[in-house]
Structure formats: C-alpha cells, structure tokens
Amino acid sequence: MLTLYPDIEPYARHRLAVDHPHELYLEESGNPDGIPVIVIHGGPGGGCEDYHRRFFDAERFRIVLLDQRGAGRSTPLAELRENSTTRLVEDLEAVRRFLGIDRWLLFGGSWGSTLSLVYAETHPERVLGLVLRGIFLCRPQDIQWFYQDGASRIFPDYWQDYLAPIPGPERGDMVSAYYRRLTSPNELEQIQAAKAWSVWEGRCATLQPNPKVVEHFGHPHVAIALARIECHYFMNRAFLEPDQIVRRASRLKDIPGVIVHGRYDMVCPLDNALALHHAWPEAEFQIIREAGHSASEPAIVDALIRGVEDVVARGMPVAG
Image 1 (tube, rainbow, N blue to C red):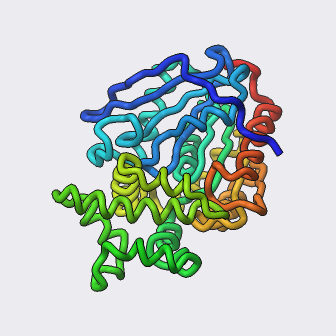
Image 2: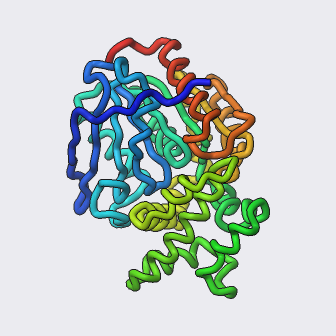
C-alpha cells in the first residue's frame, strides 16, 4: 500500500488580493518546473493542511496549495461577504494567471471535488486532469442527509451533541437554525455553534474513530471558518443550479479523471460518486472498501497517489 511522500516545505508563499475584503493565501512546493497541480480543499471553509503537499512526488510536481476565501490563512477569517462558488472559480483563474500556469491538474476531495468539477466544467481547456475523492454534488438531498436526517441514524450518539445548541422547536431545519447562531453578533454563541457543527463532521469522517481528526475539526480557528462558510453555502444551495454538476458533465469527457470514494463514507454517501460516474463514464471509478470520507485514511491515501499516477500516465505532459 502506498503512503504519503516525505514532508516538504514550500519554496514560495504568496498573498493575492481579490474582491474586497478578501486576500488569498497560496504556496508552492516541489519542482518549480514540474507538472502543475493545485489542491482544492474541502468544506467549503476547511483550509489546506501541510500533509496535502505529500500526495505528490516533489521531484516531478509543482504543488500549489490555496486557502479559499475566508479559510485557513486567507483573510478575513470566516468572511461571508463576496463568498460564493462563482467567486471561488474566479479565484482559481486568478491564481492560475498569477502563477503563470497554462493548464493544471486539480486534486480535490469533498467540497474540493465540487469546486474542482465546477471549475473544470467552466474552464475545461485549463484542466490537465482531475483526481477527486469523496464526491459531493451539493444536491439538497446530500445536505439533508448529513445535517438533518440520514447520518443521524448511523451516529445517533454523536448527533445528540450536534443537536444540543438548537432548541427543540427549531430542529426541523437544522441548517437554518445553525445559520442564525453562526451569524449572531454574540461571538460566544458563534463559536459554540461552530464547534458543535464542525466536530459532528470530524467524528463522522473516518471509518475508525480518529481523535486527531476530531481535534483538528474542533480547533476554534478551523471550526469557525468551516461552520460559518459551510452553513452560508448550504443556505444558498451552494450557489449552484439544480443538478448543475451532473447536467454539465459532458464537458468533462476529454479530461483524464479518477474518482475515489470510500464505501462507508457517511459524510458524502456513495450515491454522489455513482451519479457522477454515470454522467462522466470516461473517468476511472474506484470504490474503496475499507474507508470512509477522510483523505487521511490509509486506503484512500493509496488510491489517491495511484490516481495521480494514473492520470499522468493517460497522456499528460511531463512538465507544465
């Protein structure tokens, strides 16, 4: 089984101003003359992590990490103004031009798969390939499953802690109830709601309990951005038209692609990936038997590293 490449440090860090008040953090590591690959993190609002650099051979890839609007090291933290899917696609184009990249490989999981697909359907001529994990189509039923009724029956014990900040009369629409608290002028109410929202996701993300993942999701800096931005997007149906990704999937047919999805993914159930594969049959589709949602699970790591090599072998140029 393949494991992550050795840890590396960036050779360049940048801050890129986009629409006021947003300033994006991005970094480059690996080989400046290598195959350009950008990591599209999850959430929305999750931010990149250092281990994301380690899915790629540093001698062969120019590895770009970007914290999306309001996430990670981008500023202002957890900012909702001018924060939408269209704006994030525009940001990717701004980053591509800023770095002087003609075409690049997109590597994204969960919400990162959503944004990667929307970007690729908007700018297919700029995409060398897609390596996607934990597919999230952002349909109403997908949001309903995890935040209202579905995963709650798989993890009823964890669900009680997710319910706790919301009074009984408001529990018929948990996303709206959380949104009121996450946008409250009361900062204590915001952070309490954010931690409950984010820890729910962290607890459900792995096949086996992983305290390190839960701890990461519960960190106040991570939780406030993840919860506020996710809830903002879900209140707005991810700023997508109904079934937008599947309906436009024909635009992906000439892009080499790999879809990796855990059999026991409780955050983004497998039917997301199956629907995408039916609409985009040219992509290689792998169901990982012993895995849930998280990119850090060993079988997912193995499949993603192999997926990158598969996409490269299917006709990508050696250097970008």
